[in-house]
Length: 328
Ligand code: 13P
Ligand code: SF4
Image (tube, rainbow, N blue to C red):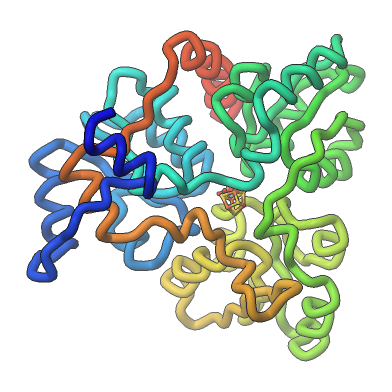
């Protein structure tokens, strides 16, 4: 194992000292130009990283952007499954992440071998998987969806088609309720969206009767049932611009509030409280592993890099391309 690989295996990134004299933002911009790199970022990363991303988006927009980039290097600032998706779409490009340990509890809830056994137990089902899953799970799927296009893609199958939906049972339940399907659900969930407290949300609604509750479909059913609007991160952002309301209770990861405030500074946003007020549970601890220093180090050393087995990559690409085709 070379020195970089040892550092990455230990800490998740090339943990070498950076002089306090260095202006990280201008160095990142310089390295990006020199190396023809592009920075793709998800709405849940911290505001200072959102502000330096070349493209900021939800999972679908990021996959679409990754599919058409002309850059030689993609620095993906989000979580591992998103960078893996970018690599699957760009096998010949270098895809870097600031921290290899930025994973996803939802993707981790469906280990490849367990999911394979589940799929084998249920023949005659098509496999629809949420993009928040590993390359192994993608390779076992017929089509990938995101929260932006899931309803449309599920409805593209004949009504009598048996469907497995994985890994998010909350999104799966929501889709079953809006499509009338009875998809067989894998029992996975996101540790951030599962932690919102229904009792505290209802209390907030009572204290702010003029506020609308907007929620991501990864939230549990009781929270969705009392929501005024349900949608992907991009759909929530669009909704606050068109809604007449001035105040919103936001039931998704707190990073999104930065774009909401930038888009509509005159409106008021209240983060939905989680079960434990002291835990900061509505922050995704994986997304928050990304930092300016790690972005700089990743561009400088071109590490950590997403490497995938070629056969796995080829299999996982098929359902992602299907999703991109169905999303047009
Ligand atoms: P979207 O950005 O697609 O809405 O997904 C949210 C999420 O949990 C990403 O991990
Ligand atoms: Fe995964 Fe949840 Fe974090 Fe999204 S918010 S990356 S689903 S753990």
